[in-house]
Length: 285
Image (cartoon, rainbow, N blue to C red; front, side):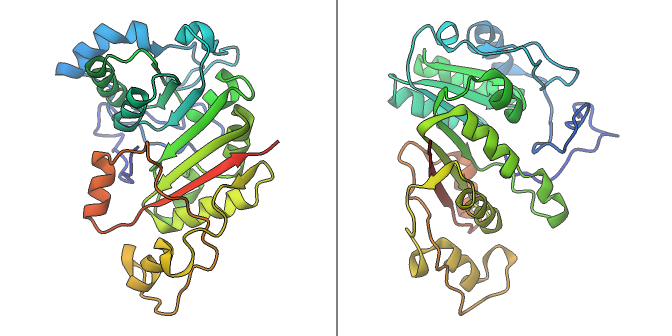
C-alpha cells in the first residue's frame, strides 16, 4: 500500500530496478530498494522458506513464468476460503485480518521485499499459520498463478494513485486489470477497494459500474451530502478549486470495511486532510 508518486533516480539509486523491463505495458508500481537489514533481514531468513512463495520467473524479477500455477491445498496445507490482498505494503492490514479470521487463508501480493519482511515479523508475532506471500506483479499472479474462480475476496487498498494525468495509464485499476480480477474471483466473491484520492475513486467507480462482471454492493449509498466526493469538491480539498454547488448524485460508496484496520499509511493520509473512499463489488456469474 504505497501512495508515493516520487520515482527513484536510476542514475543515482543503487537499489532501483526498472519495473517496465521486459514488459509490454506500463506497470502500476515503482520498485524501491530490495535490500534487507536488521530485524527484517533476520525475519526473512527465519520465515521465507515457509511463508514466501517463490515462482519461476520470466526475465524480470517480479514476473511469473507462464507455467507457475498455485496449488492452494499444498501451499496452505488445507482447503479454506481464500482472501488475496494486492499491495500489502507493510502487512498491517492482512496480518491483523488473518489473526481475526483463522478459518480463512490469506495471500499477500507485493513487489516490495522489505514490506514482505515486515509482514514476516507480524506473522511471527501473531503466530499465524494462515498467511502466505509472493513478491510478484499482481496482474501476472491473477492471470497465471491463481486458478479461475479460486479467490473468495480480493482486496486492493490504497494502490498508487499516480496523480499526474500523463501517469494515469499506470494506475492499477483499469478495465483490463478488472478482467483479471473477475477471472480469479468466484461467482459471488467480493472485490474491495479503498483510496484516499477522489479522482482515482471516481475512476474506480466508473470502471466497475460499467464492467459486466461486477455489481455494486451499495448502489446509491453515501450519495449527496453524505458523500466524501461532495465534501472534497465543495471544500476545495486535494488542491481542487472549490465547487460550492457540486453534489455527488451517484454515491455507491461502501461503508468502511471492518477488517480494514487503520494502518500507519491511512493515518498519515487522514492527518494530511484527505478523505477515504471505499468500494465493494460482487463478482456476478
